Length: 465
Ligand SMILES: *Cc1c(COP(=O)(O)O)cnc(C)c1O
Image 1 (spheres, rainbow, N blue to C red):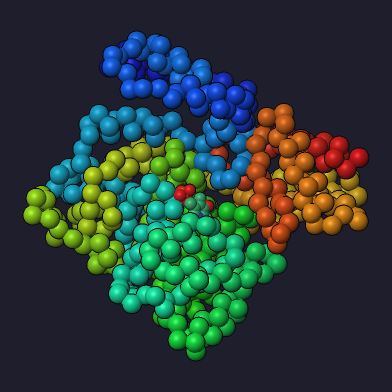
Image 2 (image 1 turned 90 degrees about the vertical axis):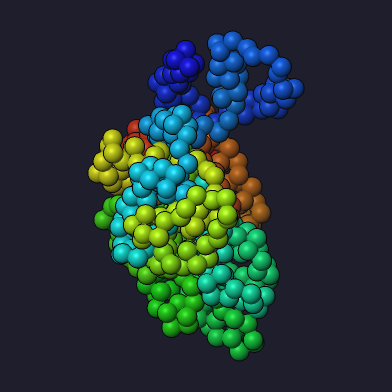
C-alpha cells in the first residue's frame, strides 16, 4: 500500500510540476494508445513500477489536457488535487453514506456541503439536495422530480420550455424522463443570447389553448455556448403566474454566486424550484461531482421516497437525512469529502478570489480581441461579450458567404490551437461557426490568457492575409 501510494505520488509530482510546459492537447497516436490497453484480464499481478510507468508515460499524455492552464475549451475546472486525496481517504475508509445511520457524521459532512451550497445560492431553510456525478444527472433528477410532483401519471401532454441555447442534457433528460421529444419548446433568444421571456409566455398561452399542459421552464444560468444568463426574475414571475416548475441549469455559472458580480448576474436564482450546480466546473473539482438543489426538500422526498425490508432503519429527524430517500442512488461514492476537504483547507475566500480572477480574465480577453479587431480593420467580431467567463468570436471578411466564413473560422481555430499552448473549441450561433474562450480552470492566470490572445492575433493575421 505505502509503496503504491509513494510511487504514484512520485509520478503525480512530475505530472503536476510539468503542467505549465505540457501540451494543452495531444492526439498523437490516439488510436495506437487506445489499442495498447485492449488486453485480456491478467491472471497474475505485475510490478507496481511497470504498471505506473506504462500508465503515466503512454496512456495519460494522449488526451485533451484538461489539467493544463491553457485548456480553455468546453467548460474547464482543472481538478483540484486535494479533492483526489479526499477520494483516497474516502475509498479506504469506504463508509456507506446514503443511509444516515450507516455513517452518521460522514453522511452529515455531505449534508453540510449541501447546506453551504444552498446558502450560497440564497435558498433558505427547508431547502436541500444531493451530490450527483455531474450536471447531466442533476438535470435528469430535476426533471424527474418536477414530473413526479406536478404530473405524476399524465405527462404525455405536458410541455417543457427552455431557450434555443439550452444544454443538450436538458432535452436528453426530458426524453429519458418520458416526455415526448416534440413537447420540448426551445424558445428564441435576444441579442445577448438570453431567452425571450415574452415569446416564452406567448408559447405557454398557445400551448394551453391547444390542450397541452405547460409544466416546466428551464432557465439558463450561464449557457455553455456563451455564458448567457436568462432573466431569472422574469422567468420566476412567469413560472409563478403560470404555476410552472422553474429549474435553473447553473452547471456552468452557479459557483459565480460566490462573487459579487456573479450574484448580480444571477439575480433571482433562489426563486427557482430546483438548481443544477457542477462542482467539477466552478469549484474546480475533478470530474464526477455535480449537484442538485431544491428550494423545498419535501419535493425530493416525495419524488424518491421508497424503502426495502432489508434496509437499515431510516431517519425521521429533519436534521439527519438519508440520501437514498432523496435521490435515485443507493450505494455510491462519498462525494461530500472531495468538496469538504478543499473548502476546509483553503476556505471559501480562495474560491471567491479565483472565480473573480476568471471573470477578470474573460474581460481582459474581450478587450484584447477588440484591440485585434482595430488592428485588423473590423474583421474580428465578438459574437458574445462575456456575461460570466466565456467570450465568443469569429473573423469575417467582406464578400464571403456563411459557409465560406465558417470554413475560414474553422481554419483559424486550428491555427490558434496548433502550437498546443492553448486549446479552444467552437460552437454554432445562428448557424455561424463561433470560437469560444471559456476560462474556468484555477490554473489559468493572466500570463496564459495573454499568450492566448497573442496566438489569436497572429493566427487571425495569417488567415486574413
Ligand atoms: C456542463 C453542463 C451540463 C452538463 O454537465 P455534466 O457535468 O457535463 O454532465 C449541463 N448544463 C450546462 C449549462 C453545462 O455547462
